Amino acid sequence: MVEKKRLFLVDGSSYIYRAFFALPHLSTSDGIPTNAIYGFTAMLNRLLQDYRPAYMAIVLDAPGPTFRHEVYQSYKANRPQMPESLAAQIPYIKEIIRAFNIPVVEKEGYEADDIIATLAKQAEADGAEVTIITGDKDLFQLVSSNITLFDTMKDTGTDVAAVRKKIGVNPEQATEVFGLTGDTIDNVPGVPGIGEKTAIQLIQQFGSIDALYQNLDAIPKKKVRDALRNNRELAFLSKQLVTVDCRVPIDCSWHELRPGEPNIEALRQLYKRLEFTRFLKNLPREQDTHKHYQLINHPDQMRSLFSRLREQGMFALDLETTSEQPMRAEIIGISLSCAQHEAFYIPVGHRQVAPQIDKGLLLQELKPLLEDERIKKIGQNLKYEYI
Image (cartoon, rainbow, N blue to C red):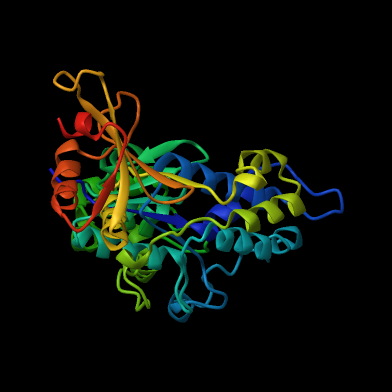
């Protein structure tokens, strides 16, 4: 069975704010604040090391008002200005992202949530899985069998069942609940007098704000009926404000969001400047930076590698097996190389390595390369490999 492609979308703006307020004050010896930079960099390192994503983007809020401000001028009006010590860290965070060579997506007039929604729905429609790195409950509405949320700060994932457990309704009904409760952080009014518990009960009973207003007389509590009747416009306005736009006219498609190889020297200089000793120690030693060894554990990475081997017209290979006796051996991985100081390893049968490439898929994709007489193969003990 062919593995699904998987897209990682990082809610960058939200994560930067959360890192700034969650971590204690940090600064360099000459006074550069670094807590948000540190938290953001730690998150990127973890994602890249744990998942090695074939598709990934950092999504940011563009400066200036959005279409929601046109609908409701007071939208986010009570939010304080960005703290100076956080604003000072943004340029460094953008440098970190560039050094990691990860695509960034932003669009004037839209929030990061809208861009995330657009890309996630595009990818889902194409049969891909999507993981959104966020702690924002506003994105509960996107959760489906193929779209999940992951909060790296709390190390928790949110799928359909988790949304139901957290807010008592299905993901597609999240905007109905939030439309009634509003959001004080974003200055979304909601319906005055309707708290979360009541909102959940109402949507569980009626399913939507539309159905709720069609059946006001069926609500037993007069106080709740009056609150809804007197604030009808606010209820529908609030739902509109909390609903993400899945059709943002962005200039790229999700399958173009391919992270490249990190610029190790750029990261080294940034880590030195920011005094990130821990991250600096994890980089390859300076004399080893010309070497490149990569784990290939996604079908798209594998196909890209095989295309390169075909273009090179020559490659070396070595099988990792369970036995020295070829008739008893099981393949657990394969090493490949087509250039000096560069090698790739594809795991297929390790017990404690995940994710891995399906062995059948590997053999299916590798067979045409091995059978192509125009491509030279190099190896040690190739007779064993052949058997």
